[in-house]
Image (tube, rainbow, N blue to C red):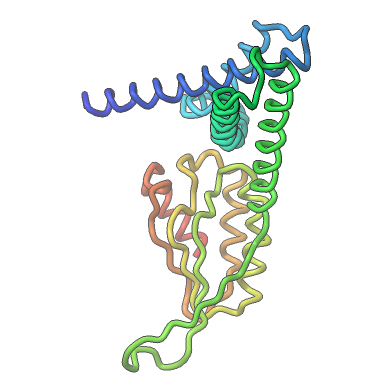
Length: 245
């Protein structure tokens, strides 16, 4: 127990320090663009967004947890790339100063362009990630098995990480089921993380179950537990699966 608490404190300290660094650098850049920005308002909004990943785990009403989950899901992507690109920008500016490629004191315009580059790179990559997450792609493999273990060639479909209850996960489920059925599988396997930790975060579990029941196979649908399914009470998890498959 002591080890878990110690690890939690270390993780929170690292996360807090990284956020302080990002918040400070972002504020310095925003002041160049918006000189009248209110520091207290900026700090309050930033702390709320950065804390959403922690607040989402608190026993709050489902509507509030859903909003916090949505904010935290997008924030973690923004956080990671902001930290990466701010570090890269500062390293480039530091090397440029050492090599006397950038004059001292550093012109305001260079700070402005460096911040703009960080903003554009972060926005572009996060936007691409959000778009790419909505695209369903088929990847096919031919698997040869030794011996005559199967009476015929089997068309098997494997999917994983549906994360029902996560941001926009349920909106994609109908399309996923339709794509599975178009492949006319004999067997469908779901390799973990059907749910996303909190079963109650699913807006319409009955609809999700009905959609999963629409998967058409010859030999059935097989599901294994993932690490995000383990947080759900097993009886509720199994009851939902029995209804769905």
